[in-house]
Length: 387
Ligand SMILES: *Cc1c(COP(=O)(O)O)cnc(C)c1O
Image (tube, rainbow, N blue to C red; front, side, top):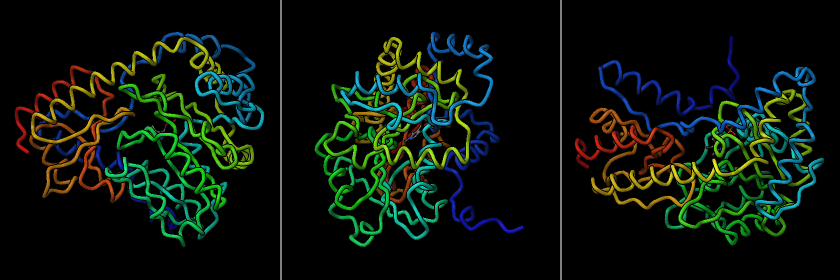
């Protein structure tokens, strides 16, 4: 049996590697506190769960769902965009349901990238942008995110040949892993860059609801000209603690939505309508639970920043997402640092290089862990760890 090259060339999924390391340390009797994966620890709000319970019993939902999402779900997404961002969307042509945004992000490359085409991908970044490109036969061209540019790509520095051959660009703000946000002027530059070159601009907006200290992350679709080239991926996973439910959406340019639908109708058959009804309840119901999560993550963020500063790591509080992206002490790689931290304290963080070469020199802490466990992890770091 010979496995396809597109699989051979994919690095092992980051968290699978980390789980292996964690198991090794645990086998030595160390009690590990994982600050690795970003997966909300709090339950889905009750009114959403109740809606699923009721809708699961409706026989009409037991048959194949609408590929593109039920009209009710697409309307709820459009209404949310109008209310939250002042953006008008046609639920028929400019909104489509996804089985989690990872699914849509993985598939969008098949809709726009032919073998040999380039994609412009942030480094560090969510690993699916790179593997999605490779699965489509494309060539990922990495755009480094550097602290001195506010972790926004320097579009003037993109190799002109790569820009010419690029079909698709990904941005992600609030950003995983750096926690950076992007303002309207930065997003406008990206829209203009992509419009001039006929590049589809994909915005991964998984953390749109999580900003702090008065920052507000605009939707890509608020930006002038964005509907000509833009596609935004939004997800119920993070704001409503619904990562296990697999419900999300893509919104934006109608041709891009249509191209994505063609790929999807041939590979999947949509999400359970009862789950979509629960997502409608999430989008249309009280947004107080989201505010509660924002406050909780801010409290956790601040306790992490405090502890890291105590051990001498100079780190700025992130304006968005639920991650802290912190520099490792000089003279060490991020992997060496994360390994030593795990071995000496049992606290697991992700080495920045796991998100791409430009992530070297950093590590990521996820704030999706019970606050008292997080406090204990930070106490261990402060007590036992010498930078
Ligand atoms: C969590 C995450 C996603 C995926 O979210 P799902 O909708 O649960 O698939 C996408 N992009 C980034 C950057 C994420 O961190």
